[in-house]
Length: 247
Image 1 (cartoon, rainbow, N blue to C red):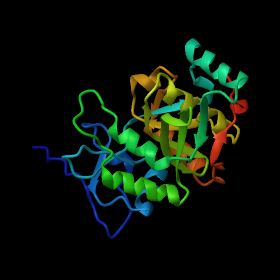
Image 2: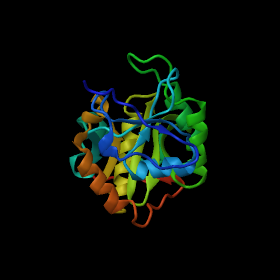
Image 3: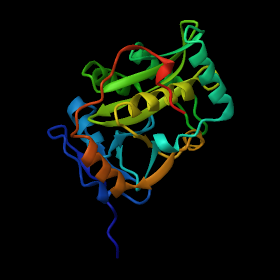
């Protein structure tokens, strides 16, 4: 008789994790539970290809899926309509639309938390997540990319940056294409610093439409081992010039 699988429980006394190859097949990638969202644990998790995710009625769960959704600069797909908007931003850099870095991190994460998701009750970005990632932001590891229209925040994304790696966490959009605009600016900004791949965690239609694709966990882990120890990405707070766009 086969013994039931026992999911490892993390201790707050240590920030270590089980080997990602021990993650469950069903549900795919579930690795451990409990622990905390301290900066040390989160940074250790991301460097090992692990991220926290749980619904409001669940304990803190840690994941490392067998297939990892990533987005590479070379495979970035920009629709015809989006390309027209980006070219207009290049022609009219003083127009209504602009993109900024790290000028409203907490506003971005709270907007992502309030986003309604199909088939999901509530949000996984609860207040403890907001506080944890805001702390990472103040420590220089979490960053936001924001789309503004007439000086109003209309879309954006946030994620974690370690070495030459960016881990996308969540996006929101109040206007058509506003989160996609932020993403294209981010990819162009990172490409200037020789960062051509970002983590998208899980397969979604939104990211697939922009060229996102899945790679095996071992391939993803090997990439992290190469790029996380490198000199960190340089983040420049404030306005991002459309001149950086390459498409």
